[in-house]
Image (cartoon, rainbow, N blue to C red):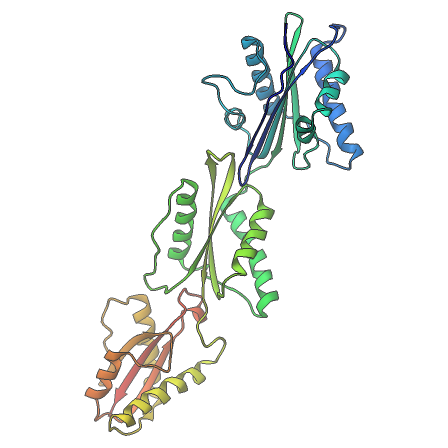
Length: 399
């Protein structure tokens, strides 16, 4: 004799819920219905419950039916009502084996000698845990398969929310467009994306791949300066959008790059997107124009000059072009010495504060007390849609 069996097990992760419940139905044996009819009636009963509550109706799925049938057969072979057996795969692994991508999944199983869809369904609905699977608003598909052994029925209901993975580029476009709209609404001016900088894109994608595999990568500062890293994992695009906005709202940034990959994890067997967003802070001078910034540097250079016994420099616009060339070259190859093209002297430095001179620039000015003219070249990475919340400053001196 079978004893009434009730097993409740719930596996919850950040992105995938696998809800597993068992039910044994006791009653008199009736064999006047075949199994396909019972399966079809059960799906209709599930959808009637959902329709009465305004929920989306569930569709049948061939691959999901394959997984349900295999599990029902396993229970019949073992003559045991269960979700798990020794050396047997989990629900997530079983769904993965039939080639499904899913954001959530649930499973109800039943043993019965009652050949009545209504009786089996009522048994599920009378159990809060089974009922939750049937009425879960996330689910999009349901397949039900039964196997007979003697006069006994072993039955499996599989529920999933299926999705078709989008490509890396499609997800990036969705997330960038959404973040850009949020940003301009919040700050009043457009967010800068580094679409033409292959290295930032490659680094963000690498971070997404490593995150999917449970690893992290070392911060890559190179010539980028500081940045924030937002890391997200979910198969739900809407959740990714909202979470990215929420995390971005916690920091002050001016530029961004987004890396994405798709794959499966032990905690996300149905597949998930891994997202790494690099958020680059703006410089302290906001949207000031270049000439105003040059005047700040010139004022600091002349202040230092006077305090150290020199004369005020005369600003020479013809030297500015050489300074700009040198500043851009320094950003692109910071390890290469910058050599002037003419008969003047030049010093280049990186600065967050344009009203402060680094030591080597002060030393340079002290050595060039005979020079009377100066030109200043500024390179702002952000203004050129490049990563870096600083300035490259080039001082070009001539007598």
